[in-house]
Length: 260
Image 1 (cartoon, rainbow, N blue to C red):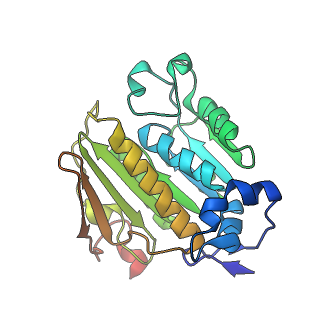
Image 2 (image 1 turned 60 degrees about the vertical axis):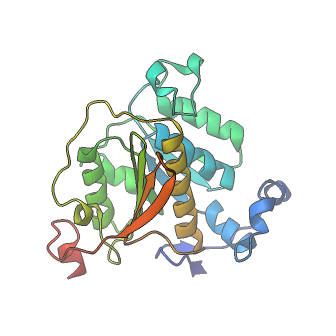
């Protein structure tokens, strides 16, 4: 029995079916990936918090890639104004619960996986059950109040967290590995200004959500090096990608004592 490089949870090898071998053929051919990594994905559970623009893209690629169970949290319904960026939904889905539509669409894409749709608000009380049994968590939210709740819960529960955010033509990504790397509070000790409506051009959450899925796959399989301790910034205006080092804050109210 082995563990992935970023998780203490045992990941026992599981056999891949003939259909799975064909479905995942192109990624199985990647050097250093192969059947062992695919088996780890099949045994894993990823929690996706937010089924909007970021969550749509991330969940599609995780489902397509063969993550065995996706737990998708969102209490909202599909709105017409969502459709410029939330690619899981179409006009006929307007008014329907996002998690129910997402579950159906993702199972159509890959019936080999399992989906847990959770139509609840994210609070201090609901988060423990949402996190239970998960291997990696994706922050696909649209407000910092809830992001900070999720950040604290993941640090306290030793759950790797991939943070993604978009605003206008800018996207951001950072991976948080509790006990090893700075957390979201290290990056933002003070609460940033909240916006009731976030302006965004559709492709940006698609790019960031896809990168969140990539980070999750890397964390689950041990492939490559995750973006921990680095904030990736995407400037869509001139299509530049650059990263900024983020240092752990020893006085961080969330993770400072944990590292000490």
